[in-house]
Image (cartoon, rainbow, N blue to C red):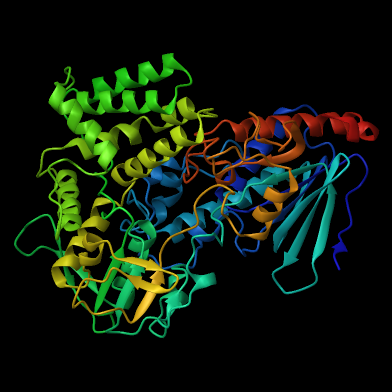
Length: 572
């Protein structure tokens, strides 16, 4: 039986916030900044905020847990973490000045260190809110959101195993959840093979311990993206291995194996390739590239909303012009770039055994500067450097499911070209290939890991001793099996358009119901809205405008509530 939690005093705006990761942090920072700007700040408590999240460290989320191993690194330049809009916590770069140089000043610092910083930002946000807001952290998992007239309740399950509770009533609910826990494609719930399965990679200390993955084991991994790289580092560096510079003076690394490592890692992927390496931050672009990107930015700014096909056309034209040194590209170059986007690989990349390794070595050589950039590099750099503008151009696209499916396929390719591992991580993968710790033969052969085991194993190949599912849940709500996502889909409180994974929201993040109107008081920010809003796996708090507009609306509502407390229920 659900247990109600006492509400707040009359005239106080009550908020329930689901999630305590970076998205929720950035939203509450924006709210604090706007409350400071509104007249009457600090004169009385005007808001009561309950943050619902099972984690013990608000601000970090699971991805930036402060206790995770230091070899798990940030995959974006830490310069993206600028100072918050309120309080005295500085940007990450300034905050990290007192951290040892081999950690804090690197462009890709340990995620645990970023977690320490985000935790400090959460404390700063709470301090900034304190004059007018009472905030508490309720360690529980949200199961359902329910509308009661003009107010809302949340059904939650405490992490300590206590009885389910109903939190509320509240005037506003903000859903700012991160990666989902369960999804239709996960191996764990339906696994029938006799092989041992490890259903997730994180936290690596428990999931990938020697008891779970014994030394000398042959390890199959589903997935070849960033979570696979986390697993590879945990099973090498985390087992005592070392990587040192090439003694011959080359730019690469040498893998010194540990007896505690598995015998070999055998990843599998859907598209037969790993992620491309990223160039180091600050690497100069080729002659003419900056001018070409500026022209691409101008065209996007002037065009406004575009169809996905128009976005891809502009992307290909800009990438081809980058390779042409800023001049008009010839037809052959344009076709090579377009073909790379369509096929997911450069036209001259040989097929067959060794294909995945050669693609990785190419991308590393380009990032090191020893190989001339090709179409994959140009597409990746164009997508990454113009990404904020591409997200605006694709926002709320109304094309049909087939057209959007083509766009999603293109985006998967572009993410592989643009948002792969830092150069040093990619060099570690090459060193693992050279040492025999990593084998991409199953990637080349198209081996698949399904709920009943291994499929497509090459003739004569040995099978694995253990299987790791290194594929995270996709963004959006469609196909997510977490209770809250299932309840939202079935409640009619959110609208999922055909072919889209995430919910449709208004400009301030307010959910649009299945019947069409706004679900006033229910806001979704982040991964739950993917495809309506593009690109949520980011620490860039400036990328999406919904957060600031939500904060402005709530601050205005709180100000009105303070002035007219008895009219609170009528305030829109």
